[in-house]
Image (cartoon, rainbow, N blue to C red; front, top):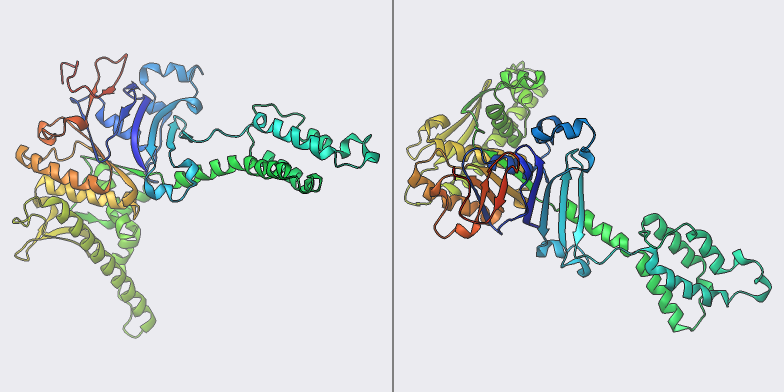
Length: 467
């Protein structure tokens, strides 16, 4: 599915952003510092966040100026919508659902209590009892005529009587849910003998009613299918960094004691370990493991297998990251800027180095800020998406701001490459990251005053003097 439109409400500096369109490949949110660009991305991520990302916190996330509405009960988090997304179905989605639903739009929204809701726009209306009542009335009328005359006084034996017992408390507006559909299907099956044999009109009516009472189940099944196909939203903050050298035992203890000393660095490091398939403790324990006695063959085999497993996974991750970074970071093929990324383990230290074209290992933190940012981005991206990255939407917060202005212009190509495989929304206040041919994909983010809050619009000019 592809996100086509979004809206954020009741979140931090945002009272109501208004609905804004999302482009097929790349959408640029432009605005000055403190306009609310980052807040927009954080809210969008909550549509379908990675598992490890925390949800909404009523105390922290509801607009501070309106918080009394929460404490006095005027506003209920259960019914307060924060973020809404509208998705267009792609061919891969349509192949999995009935043709009747191919032109639908999928709407997903999440409330302040973190509950998500969805429905289909443009889908056939859900079947209500009022739609069925007349058809059933005509059918029971014909069925009653098939009942033997001796039973005419026993109203409940007639099909119309048993139908009335089932539906006596149903209003015309009642949606035919699974339970009521089962009751109606059982009634149709039980009374099929009363359908006049050879009467094509009544047999067709019976078949039509069977299909109608099960129509809503198809609607619900489509929602279940699309729910599983909703893209995961990967937010990358400019502050996330992977350290070039990680002390595994120290990190493991911080995780166990829940005292992460630097959320941005530790988050990047934990993503790296998640990508490798290890917890900090597992790698730390391997680093602490003593070599078994030379005569204990079984223990030696286990020891060697564990070390080999670590080596193979580190190597596989190194190859994967190198390939992805080279494809994105090298706008000039004549300059081998990405070289070869290597992740190695030495005792308690996990190291990230870059092997240059001379074969020399250089620590990651000795490379440019832009290259460090890109390495950290791919680590977080792959760790959070975990093999689902083909169905992910990238949210990049102020990407490439550590780059020189001219390099930022080249970095536009990197973002464009990323957006070909993953729909991308990024924020910036740098003119170098917006091409002269990209003004139509710009959305202006502004905060004119705290009363109206952050808003998004497509007009290139801004009424905010800071813009």
